[in-house]
Image 1 (cartoon, helix red, strand yellow):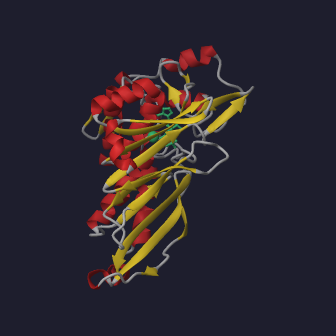
Image 2 (cartoon, helix red, strand yellow):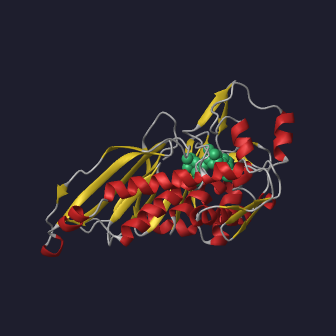
Image 3 (cartoon, protein in one colour):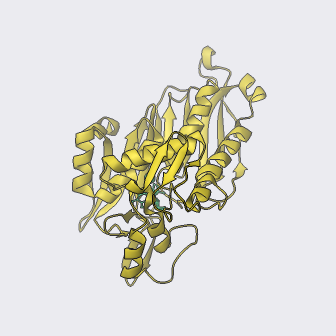
Amino acid sequence: MRLLKSISQSISIICLLLFLASCVDSSKSEMTQVMLQGKTMGTTFSVKFYATEQQLLTEQFYNDIDELLETVNDQMSTYRHDSEISRFNSHATDEPFVVSTDTAYVVKKAIEIGVSTQGALDITVGPLVNLWGFGPSGKVVQVPTDEELVLAKDFIGLDKILVKGRSLIKTQDQLYIDLSAIAKGFAVDKIAEYLDDKSISRYLVEVGGEMRATGKKLDGSNWRVAIEKPASHDRGIQQIISLIDKGIATSGDYRNYFEQDGTRFSHTIDPVTAKPITHKLASVTVIHDSAMMADGFATAINVLGTEKGLAFAEKNNLAIYLVIKSPQGFEVKYSKAFSPYLN
Ligand code: ADP
Ligand code: MG
């Protein structure tokens, strides 16, 4: 499901409004299916929903969603030097730094996920992400040295950041936050909330593979989404999921990685080793009410690995689906809470 993780780039919406008139029964006869597509955060987004002719005449769905995604970028993208998070990152003092309610909320929720997973999700891991060439400054020619990693580790840790209301406070001047593991999911939730506000009750929203569905399609069938086979060169389907009123996110090492001397380096960093994860987990899919939480947990479970990830999911009743590399090909494991989605 993944593409680039950059919370970057200006949004250029390329294609929109594909109208497909649907006349299923009298109560739905005025409904039109709308599909909006575009680019954001270094990846693509798509929004499918049903609206009345009247709503399409009076609402500016395309412009509003464009603006909303632009705002999330301005708040949370480390790829924009003047975003709120970038300005906080270069604010080298423990003086409180006021951000928007949304940024403070995402940082707070990311810290909560981080604490509950014993630091597997760690938004202070940014300096390591950058050293390994997965940040805004782009790819690196050489993998970082142990000395560089040890130095960077001094700036990392969830104990070095505090959220008080709308203020972010760093207790280490070089602290650098990277919200890439969670911001796409948050953008999905923002679009979903926007559609809820507009009384749109059937939709499927997707940003860079993270999704959220509400209601059913007009013909009464469920929104169906695919978990991809976690292979870099094969866009095959691993599993189809019927999604009702939930968010879904996948984290994997099969899209964003580099190879050096036969070793694959994933864009997911284990904060304990300061290095890309090396276990046999190929992809992690999480279903949660909130796409943001699904996104954050998917990255966290990816760091934890199969055994610890499954133990965490069972303890917390979290719906997770794991694809694991084995000599015989891909093996699948999932938590109890995920089984209802496989029918
Ligand atoms: P995607 O969904 O695009 O595959 P993820 O949601 O898993 O990506 O987020 C990966 C991104 O999160 C990385 O590119 C990096 O910027 C950041 N990151 C990497 N490791 C961690 C970590 N342990 N905790 C928090 N963020 C991380
Ligand atoms: Mg994630």
